[in-house]
Image (cartoon, rainbow, N blue to C red; front, top):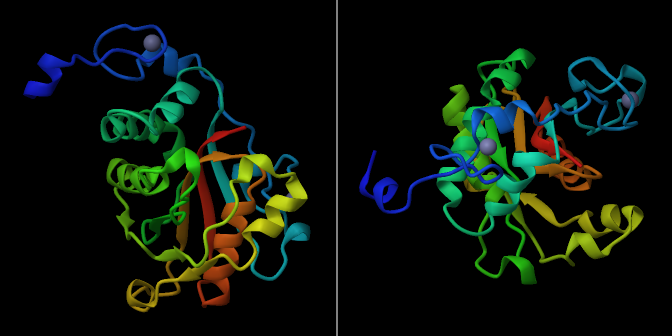
Length: 225
Ligand SMILES: [Zn+2]
Ligand SMILES: [Zn+2]
C-alpha cells in the first residue's frame, strides 16, 4: 500500500465497497461477451474468424471478455478521467482468468490502436495503449507501443453511421517503421482496445498490419457493446 491508497482509498466504482475499483462480486456479476466471428457477428468458437468469412487482410479472430455493462462499463468510462492507470490494472487483472482460456500463443505481441484526438479526448490520452500494456503485463506477453500511428485526425466515430464509420477509418493508419521493422512478422499481433462496437477501427488496423507483412492478427477487447 502506498501513500495514495491511504489518502484516497480505492473503492468499487459500482457498489463502493473498499479495496478495488472493480470488486470481485461486481466483476462476477458482469456477463461475459458472446464469442463471435468478427466479420459476420455470428457465433464462433473462441471468437475465431470462420473459414468462409476469411478474406485478404481480415482479422483472424477477436477475443471479447465481457458485455459492455455493470462495473466493467463504469471502469472503461472512468479510464478517461481519474486514476486511469490503477483502473486499467484492475480491469486487466480481472480479465486474466477469462483471457487465458483462449490460449493466445506466447510469441504474440500486444499493441494498441493509435491515439484518437477528439473533443472528448483533448488531453490526448490513449486508453487503448494503457490497456495493451496492463494486459500484456498481467498475462505475461510482450508489448510494443507506437507500432501503428494515425496519419490524419478523423471525425469522432460516435456521430457516424456504421457505413460512415468504415469509410472514416479508411487510410487513416500507418505502420510506424521505426518500431515495426524490428518485429518478426511471423509473431501474432494482438490489437487491444476497450470496446468492440462495429470493429471498424480494429479491422482497419489489422489491414494495415497485414499489408505490411504480418501473418496473424487478432483483436482483444475488454467489452462488447
Ligand atoms: Zn462492487
Ligand atoms: Zn463469420
